[in-house]
Length: 488
Image (tube, rainbow, N blue to C red; front, top):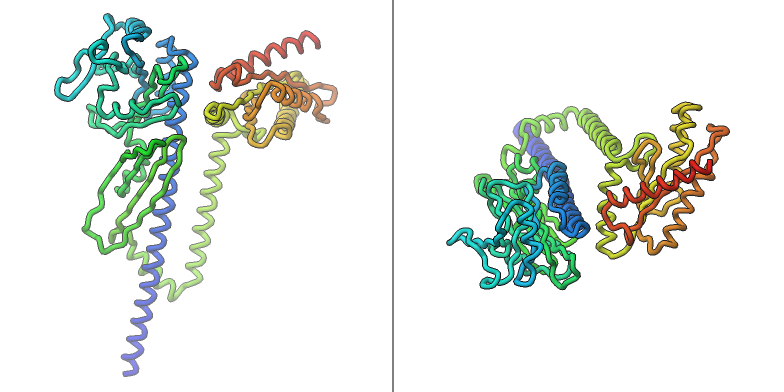
């Protein structure tokens, strides 16, 4: 009886420890699930924000060029397609009615379509000619990139059922709208994002810019491999909502195992995305050998478990540090710690898009050092590096919080400052930057004198395109540098 009682006690203790470890392993699986969901949410948020920025930039380009140069538009689109492989196509459609056939006909003739015609589409008749006099207003496509054999310039996008309801919601604002997913001829699923482009000041847009993106790219590859259930739903400012992506792979085969689910809302400029991810746990998700091994270790070697945990913690910390180092190397200058040109262009474009949307103004300053080559030639590159670091510190000390400072060349720096209400504020900041550089005290350069030629551009006069602002500021700086050489 005594041995029987001891056996029952031992078995009960073992089962208790086994149950505890099974529960602990479940928590581990759940934590891994939520950690990966966070990454997936970030992937969706960044990709959709990127698509908004690309479409807004394309629309801004069309406004700036007034859609006058088809070839310049094609060059711009090709550059974006090379940079962002998840984009399938750029398109531009023009609002055409009886009083506005031009410049539609000119655009199509320029691309070898003569005579220019407007086409409509329905599933019964296919593609047929659209009569403005008889059928009324249309939104024919005037630009497609990349152009394929199946491309149909002149096709009225308003005649396509899933696009029609979206086109009807265009007003005077630059709101971004999105269609429901649709299947392409090759079986791939795509989504069209659209934005009205108003170049005439009318109450309705004269043009519509369209961005066709691969829907499958919204799902990270890691999620595809895992086979989890995924639901991404879009809701715009008008309250219209629909499913962007839905995958259903779960079955009732192992329904007695718990189900993990994460629901999150991702707020973008003109959309709110609802993200839902589910994982139905199965017997394969639990490492039973591991659970039994940990059970034994908990009974015999508890200290060894603590050591393993600490080693794991150290590895995770090292991986985190490596990821931070890689991010730093990719986005910031190694010598000065300032943003590099890539980070400046990426972050600056988003700032300018926000500034434009808020109808405020920003200024861009382009700084080139005078006398820096003499320092390098006479005192060596190590002293030149000291000068560059000191200039970076000086610029950071003389800008406002939120302004972005970047080193974009050897001795070239740029500053993008938003919330600049007028030219008086701009000139005040310009003089402050110039005086700060001129008054630097650097003991290592002895008799050599370092100063800065500072050029600027202003969105009120030069637009909101970052490349144009950089070019204008560079030209302004070059003029000042010539005056410096004349007077030195």
